[in-house]
Image 1 (cartoon, rainbow, N blue to C red):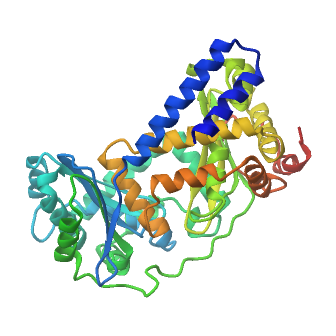
Image 2 (image 1 turned 60 degrees about the horizontal axis):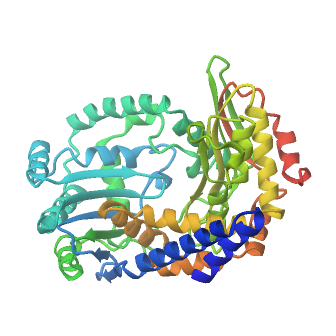
Image 3 (image 1 turned 90 degrees about the horizontal axis):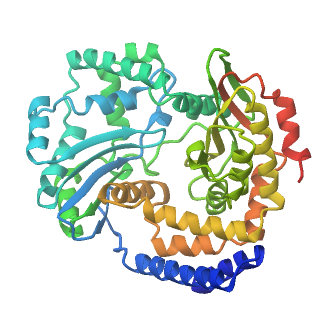
Length: 478
């Protein structure tokens, strides 16, 4: 690792005339970074994994802290809904905290508050998560509460009616978040006619018609032992957590032999969805291609490519001094207000691309520059840029694990997506194994001459028609 970092530093020295003093500074800095990074990898506690007879999995990382985060990660999200029941998973997430057969909503809230704990949840297209952050001494109380709300919620009719109004207000708030709107549009056009194309919250008519039976049926169909992971991080003893899992979740049904029901086949469609609003001050655009699934061997290379493009906004300044060539060009020519690359993976497909916010006059030029950058990634990105992106990705992955909650989230998500938690040292090895030829070949396979997908809201008339956009996926070679 240290040798590679020295090569990076030396390539920087060769790239531009500098003094010997600067070269020594780069070398020393690289050595310090490499040593610190190696120490960080060596100090990551191991993730322990157990499994109950009903397929229920327990995974934890014990760092000996006085606090911990423990949560249930469930292989159930909006993707497992029908067109008629779209929105029920998110609706259930709201209802799960409204009281159980053992606790009223007030009693539940007081108990969590008196513990000094935090209880939260979220729903995605493929997962539903309920988690608690608490003192390590209160681990059993937190696990018991998680078991109670997911198994014994009353789902009372009067509370369902009240919650409809709350969810409708939430939908109105999301409609003002244009980034959320654009990504919903992106899924709708990329996966049109399939469950992945639907929103997580569901349409208004569904929210108004979802019944108590719909909620209970969703729990019955999807909250199965072999579709759940109890993840813990912080001051968590794995044996104790396993015993608690047996006590509170050991009686759950096992569900399907394959753990997951058969999914409706994914179908990616290169297309565009534009909501032109000329009165809006800025255009919000997401443009991408079909990516890869979680466990695809190409995923690491696509992560590196996404990191190479990175993110930028006007507050950063920099201009031509950026080492990131794409950010440098965008800043120098004032093409947008901000941008960020994304790499979204699912169990059988993905979306890879870029989201940006630009003024009316620049939106077309920004799209053109982006397509040129994709072609450059496929043919001409330098080995130095790739090495730089690899180091940034490694740093970002470690920085994202700052605290018991993000570590717990990482454990639970990876257990559902990969069936195990990938050790930090293994991820480091995977990233290191992606050389320049591998990354350029991967980008070529996913980007060059492929059908893009575009979602745009605002004054977007400057974006060329889809036929022209498609042609630029193979004619612009720089």
